[in-house]
Length: 482
Ligand SMILES: *Cc1c(COP(=O)(O)O)cnc(C)c1O
Image (cartoon, rainbow, N blue to C red; front, side, top):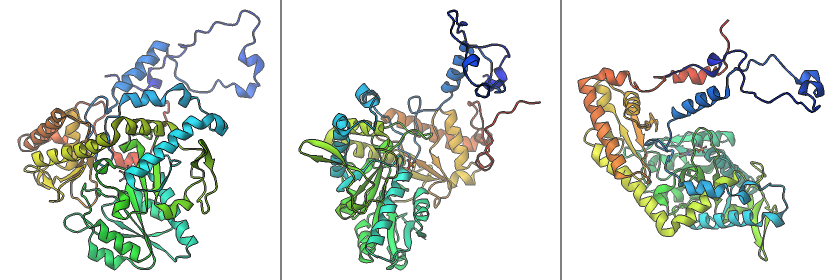
């Protein structure tokens, strides 16, 4: 394997440029452009076109992707997204739209957003949606800015946001960005919200609770109605982090559970390939009493015409240009129409079945984080393995040698040696069996030859990277060795 950078492969004087010198009196760039526009001091690599093509094609083959292997990354919903949705979002009519076209000739796109909103309202029980936010985290910020404005308009004195210790890291980040004090409550021994602790933490200054259900342990918060009662009684609101909504589709919804404002990651649950900062959409939904706070504009319909409605009384303003990542909305819409009601229920059932299948097959060899049944993901606690000399990290890295992406590790933070497995609804039983078999084999390897685990992965170009250093001291600049 040639691990050299493209700069190291560079061979001075070689170029991929084969444009002939102009013969018919056309001017060369240096004759037209001011001298300071032309630079000769850029240290660009010199390579032929074929070398460039090979360099990048070989690099691309080292990418790990859902199209190549199993990717059970917990709390991420790395599922297969039908290719037809890619084609539909690339239709010329969608692709070549410009947001400054007038409403007349945007009718098809506006109708799509309008219809998508109606479907998501039906699925979640919310009254309205905004599609501006480009990610789950930005959706949370949008939702919590609405919570803040709501309390301001209502003249409620609010200071605190309650967040369970099992929450996704973006939740406390969002609450802090909105200027709230974050009050963390410890989960009970089952991994659920502790009602006694919640009762003690809530008071008249509680602005909201931010929750996900199923929570990050993959468990259904069975006391959610009681939680809603406690928060609402104190004048607070319930924020629902619906990033991974798979297990609930068509089964129940956040409105029935008492939530007031939610976000869905269309790029996780509703079919857009994601990861590495690709385009996303954090669709933010609200119940009726918060609809006057949505980012403007929303899309409404008057006499068969769709239009941008900027008249939103207490709108928090815009959170992003235009209507967010429109192509993600097209994929979500195509996905929903294709599956329909029955298909969506099967998504929920299969996501849950797959997680529980893995749970049952591995629970004798790996400890579970909770004795409660799992929803769409299952969290193991590799403490037995740790005692024998192999950590969750070692196991995760060894899975790469078996051709699979590691599950989420050391999250949620409240679980020791956590491995969080989210198989998703799109994996076959054969794939799940291979994963299970590999996990069992790895467990045996700990007794037979721990070194294999400590040195894993052995099949990749890069072994174990120093993740802390990469985060604290990112140095991505190539400098020529002098
Ligand atoms: C992925 C995720 C988020 C954040 O979504 P991004 O699109 O990555 O910003 C928030 N909450 C939960 C529970 C998630 O799984």
